[in-house]
Figure (tube, one colour):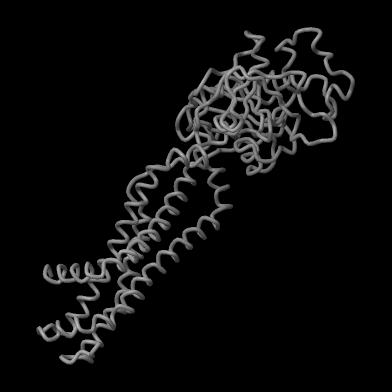
Length: 432
């Protein structure tokens, strides 16, 4: 066996230029396949862990998918809100460790504005890690610090996209903007006091303000029309705003954390049985997994494309070796003259083809590992995918095994051609 391996390697080395291109082609195709599978798994994991540490998401009764989309990913808008009294009742439940209110509706240059409380920065996790600060701090509690009404915290992508720094003054837009009237909250600009580090989660694309500050921006608004349009633009500026007077009437959703996660089902039933307000409590992990099924057809299509690309590369090995076989008839005839049996020649060419394919598969795996290691920060910051580089998963190993089987089947073609030529030519190779 050692003799045939050495002979196959020397034969391949004599045609190294052509075979190098074929090997690179196989490696690139394997790189595409493994990268697609790795990104698919990591994207699903990042999607499922976009909101860690939250046991329940509470909102008005309706569609769980809709609640997850607007409360976690800030996609779409709630058809109706839940009462603030429901949030207060949830806070009083003995099983609840913390509850974070979520208020949506405004935007900043296309990015959603999220009204909440400072508790969010200490309790909410993303991708299993707590929120960390790139600059500054969280906004304060308006009850103790009245200036906190005008403080704002930026997600990493918002700060990077617009080049904001601490101390910058920002003006929010009522709703999505673009209406016929002036919809900017320029009567109450907000000051940047903190910028979060990138998390790869939707919070990177979010502007966070105090819940009371969110309400303060809407003082004097009516039917979605700005106070200036109603000629009451600065009616609230004559006297300082009191945080107690800015308690909202309704909320978009509430994120809930429990003392003991085993009580999640009993707490869920209790919340959904409130008589004051018909509410719905959703377990984020389960709902996110269900939501991911919507895009499962797309991810399966990507894997299928990767498999087809890899299979075509394996067939290209067979095509190159078949084309080169005519020029190797003398080599095969010499081996026959040395007493090599036709079946041995079949195995010899099969071994050479397999070496080329396996070398390409190995290089493709190494390229994939290097790419994932090198691009993990870019993928996390730019695309919100937390990559976990490592050895291939079980599914990736199955794909590599399938590619090896395809490589073996493709190698049979040039090996069978060599077998036929050796029987045909014998000791009399054609003159060239």
